[in-house]
Structures are given as structure tokens and as C-alpha cells.
Length: 186
Image (cartoon, rainbow, N blue to C red; front, side):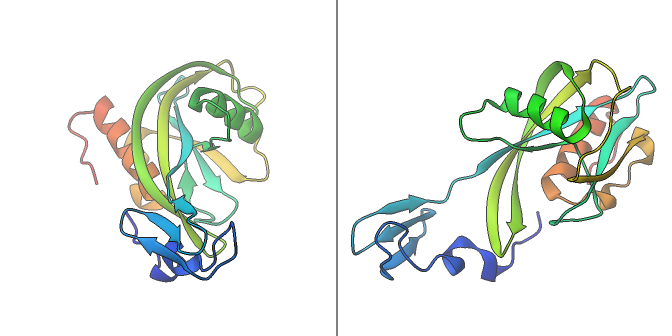
């Protein structure tokens, strides 16, 4: 996993209590902040995200190219963040519909991987939940503004160095290894 820049870690970015605006807002090793002024405690927790492993009828994996930072131009899996109040399964279906106009017909949980996600000067911690999916059809597939392009790639032709996010690289590596026990995991 790529080390986040020390300057973008929450303990180096958050300076004031979000409740009372006191500067007596301090980071603790248990991944929380405590305000000495009002007693407010703020925990740094992982944000949930979903990713879809989808193969076409030729056994090629669907990969996308990121249109935005972080990792603009790098390969990714379709998916995105789970919104407040959503289940991971619902978020997966919503993200695939929004990003690629795909309708999920089957989904099975595969694995989860932690990650860091630097955005707008702050490092977020995520837990990426990967699902093996089938879709109703690829006929109406089109990308939205978050995806520069999409492509289907044979497992043996996937360049793991082109995968932008460490968690997605690990998910794809585990998926390829599950399909081919001789696959060399990176």
C-alpha cells in the first residue's frame, strides 16, 4: 500500500474542533481526536467502497480508466463509495448503473482490502469490498464522467502496475489467483 503523504494525514490536517472550534483538538494513537475544551471525540474510521469483478463471455475482466484524481488515467474496477444509509450491495448496483449503465443480475462477495485515498489534501481510509458480478447485458454500456474509458482484458494480459489503487491491485491479484492457482501474486 502506498504510504500517504504525512502532510495529508488527518492528524496533520485537522486543527480545530468541529463542535466548538477550539484549537485544543488533539490526535490520539487510537485513531481519534479529543477536544480538551468541550470533550468532543472524533474517530477516524474507514469509509466503505465497493468494486465489481465482471467478466464477459470470453473470460475477459472489465476494467475502467479513471477520469479523475486520485490516480487519473490508471486502471480500476467499476465501483465507488457506499453512501450513508446504503448497503454495500445496493451501492454496488447503484454505482454500476451510474458509471456504466449496467444492471447487476448476480453478485457474490469476494474479498475486502484496506486502502488510503488522498483527495483534496486529506488522506481518507477506505475498506474496499469486492464482489464477483454478472450483468444482464453489456449492450447499453456507456461510461459517465468519472470513467475515461473501459476495456475488457484477458486475465493473462492484465498489467498490475497499471492498476492505480493498491487495494484494487490486490483484489485483482487475488481474483486472478483464485481462477489460476499458478498466478504470481504481486
